[in-house]
Image: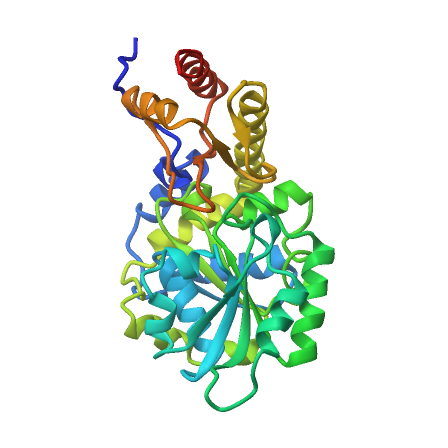
Length: 349
């Protein structure tokens, strides 16, 4: 029997453990010695598997975490005097401690608003055309978050429209795919359809939020942008000496299909939670729950009661409200307990 203060983790999908398929491959990689610094058989096999996964001869690199993936990739897509256009709620703007600016030696992030956490072609063009003098950091890259920081997704048509705007102004397109698997599951689209076929030049694909212990894949569809990227990783302390322990679990996700099953499950749990909150008087959904995140506004007293009962959630991410994130191992029973506690707290408020 859980006590009222037993931690119940829904603040992030980063709180989940390693999924069985990833753990299986991690143990396989641990069964024998292999070469270091990515020269092992597991890393080569994982890179080749990604090329099959995207049906594209892409350049693939592996780093420890998402901040490094985004920061190093954006640094490779422009110069220090360039700028990166992103949504005002983008993770690179709000939660990476200036990493993109640091690793690019100063490239500025230019932000704009957009409904449901998404950039629009019009918003992008307004930043590109605002000024053209030498005192303004020259726009070079568009950064999209898929799924967005508020749990919505860019459709293929929306991506194509942004690519058209990028072509109009000579811009690159970067995709922060912290929850890319969830976007694929939500849209029932292939990885290719949401990346290179829609004009994405580089993708930072998270495994950590999809069942891995750690590790992100940086995938370049534009070969020119990948030049010397391995050196960037080494200089930034992102070249793992025992790389196989990052790459073998990726194989567990990709070869077994767990990458999609995990995302489908997390998305389904989020839909269930969103429907439950929508039925509670006094709770209001802030955004469509299209991926695995649910944003809801609740009275302050209710939020405090939930925290006292051990529920973990954030109120500073996205556009306010409370964010609950479902993962590959989230259960309906856990969500039912949350909804029961919320219902009780709302009744008492």
